[in-house]
Length: 424
Image 1 (cartoon, rainbow, N blue to C red):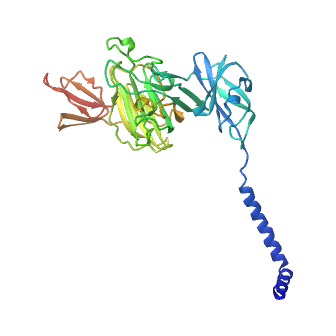
Image 2 (cartoon, rainbow, N blue to C red):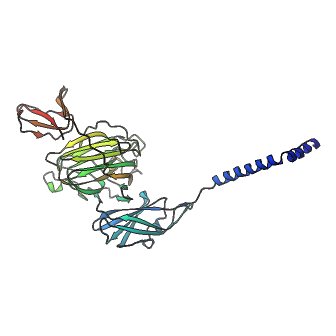
Image 3 (cartoon, rainbow, N blue to C red):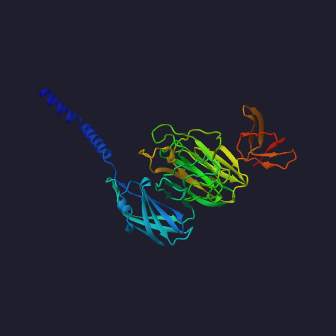
């Protein structure tokens, strides 16, 4: 004991500086560990965006963390530097409030003040006060079809080019001509002539196998239009459209979904939906999923990308007669609840998140026309690039064949047919 005690004294005496430095380092490390064990306080923040709705603007406020819906929907907690706030609603799936504001002018910028919104998480500090800038715009949203499920739908604008879309849409496919119908939640702008639009589909809830989220163009919005039940009444018919979209990896019950890029369209007003073959498709790698729809004259080309800069063509469509000059283009989401049993707990609203919507400012490639005719088990088939045309004589007149590649040549009992491929 004495020896040990003496050695301890000698060590302390002879190495005082060493032990002093060691003690300082040890305390510093313990302090660092203590600091790392305590979570830093987070402050609730928000982002504003807007869409037109009738003559008003719907100003969305998306919060950074779950909020108390009572304080988030208290009109007294919001004010705008111009115009008048008349209504407010909360969208739980998007964690956002939407304010109806009147008296704003398209393209003008405004400031929304938000204060005293409490977080649902006690570790997140409330939003005491913040000023959010936004610009009124003409882009709007609608529910395509009659919303037969009765499930509320909404579009939350997040900043200038991102959206959280909530939908309970029933179906996005018509399998019988004369009984056209589809449902989708559609945020859109009106365009004239050529356009080029792309969007990143970051996420979509597990809905049905055929849930669809992407970009669509329509000749008419068909807002709140009921299902067509008279094939002879064109006033009931749903419009022609072209869409490019992605399906989820998993469906509501955890089984694999279609998990692919997809193109579908309606070539004839009131007609059935066509799902065309897609070239160069791969399983979408969320959130790095981009789709693009570009119009050049009467040719519509669809693309995919995992970066938003390098584009791979999926397919194209030529409409005959020509597609309307003035059309409606934007993002759409349809979870296709018709493929989920109504008594299943997953039969409810679904969420899709989009970002980077707009003109990709990327060139559309020049298509070199090619044509190849071969014999298959079904008869003669044409594989082509560009626009396919046919004529009864080699001198024409030539008419556009409304189809994608490959094209199955019909019965030629009425005489010879000539085909050629031209530049779009």
